[in-house]
Length: 305
Image (cartoon, rainbow, N blue to C red; front, side, top):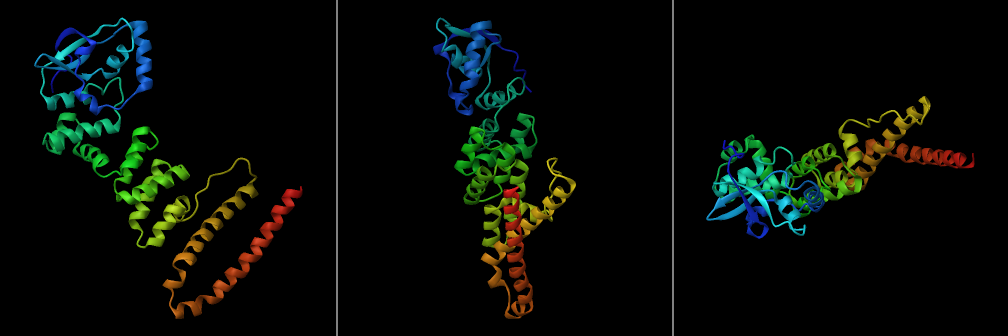
């Protein structure tokens, strides 16, 4: 691998820099504001890096420093390290030069990988070797651009969705991704929960099952895990925690039964099934009313105390 620390050092006026590779960088206004302060206080601490071709310095590392320098009156130019590399090497250098000291956004990685594979014609294995990564890493970056719906990709770019959650969503069709994204926003689902929701949707065989997962993702996850797994609430007594666990489990199962009765119950059962199960459903209706009345009485008593 090339030693990017070697190269001729020159000083260039700010208007000399070519920013053709800036399309692989996300805007970073806050970071640029911090860089303005740093340049004013300490000056330029390290040279920017440019690809040198046909007497033109094309910037590949130091975009924040350049943009910050243009905001400072009297700062005429920047010290620059020039390296003679081709276009492909420049894209690789943009990634590898930022492995230390700056966290490369996953979308920036994806743009570079996409350019190398889809535009420059390199294989995924070749790109992986150049980047010092595994082929699966390259494949996941490509998926973020080729499989993610635009609204999902926008949330990822804005930092509203984690890279891990975004990678899970690439397993779904674009239309389903937006539905899950809405559930993520509404329920504040974690990346781990998003992965489990995606797995449930992929395993769902009916439209009603998918609707339940999207409408009540946490209840669907609780049922898929074999029931609620609630932790100890320090605000409650031992008896209170015991009741809370039972209440939570009951509510989850009632929600599942409600969804089944509303969407699938009448269509799935044969006449023979209905005849055999009718006493159980009659008891469910009767006992539910009784429990509801008792729960209402308890709530009223607590309001009066």
